[in-house]
Length: 412
Image (tube, rainbow, N blue to C red; front, side, top):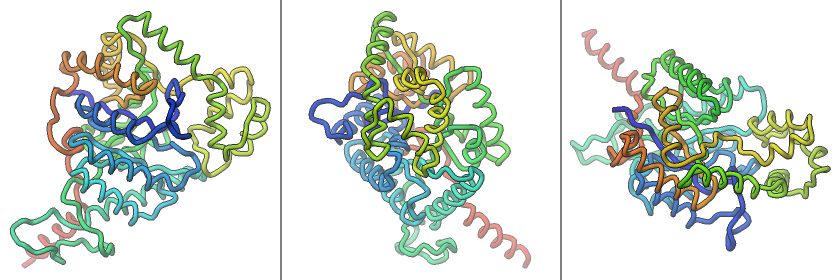
């Protein structure tokens, strides 16, 4: 029976309904113990993976290495849950990135995932083509050695190495990292259908989500990929309570706590930590519309909101992800509708606050999903691919070599 996939975003960003940092935390509002606690609890609940946001710091180009380091630390306190890190294709070399994620895959014993992304706002067609080539090169580096042959004691066999110059790159003994991609617009669909194995989407309308889901699966078929090998995961913010009234009251309290001043503080750090007031905001933002570090997903909504000042600050207090409010049964009903109706294969949970927001979902909603047999009671395997039901990627370089060898043999 088909069951939904569940992941959770780690508490390392400020996209949640309430981004107030707790006393004793640093300026970033989180520390390692927060992430460890969430990862351990998610694993106890049998979640598929934990995710890091791909836009934690809009202009921080060293973020890639830090995200892998964080997930390596989480690998030491978990045993089964997948670990997905973002790494930008703009500011890292393919060899170094392939090595970092190969290490994560090895240390975690096959639980690694890579979310490639870009930070430049150049021509989208050129950007997509470059990202595609970058992904191809990284995956080729991962696949440069054939599956280990235990019939001999040799450390390596030259004939088992594909003809790709990557001296020193060791093949991981475990599965290749799973490719995860954000989809922010229709322009990302073709690349995702071709290269990704999991896609993260933002959809608020169920009908539109179904159409998007169908379009993505059909596009995957066009690239010769089985639709079941591409998982569509919708990002949701669950606000759960014992009663409907309590859930809505909690939601309104969370919205009130996310004041305009708090959102302006977030913009301060992103805009070179410059002190920004409401009057200054309109003067500063246009200068940054074409800045290479500012993400496409942030530019267009802000450009529209700049037209009406009163709307701008009202929207800054809103959450740009789908919010699901209610009791455990009501939240489970909504998730089930999307899942059964083929609007999503699973959900990436963005807790409205930590730690209570995630605890509420795990303690109240997850048991309801398991009772309905919509979510697993136990892990199916040990790797992230096992959890997601993904096959090992075909090594195209090796496949071509085998086909050439067979055709050469039969010619005699």
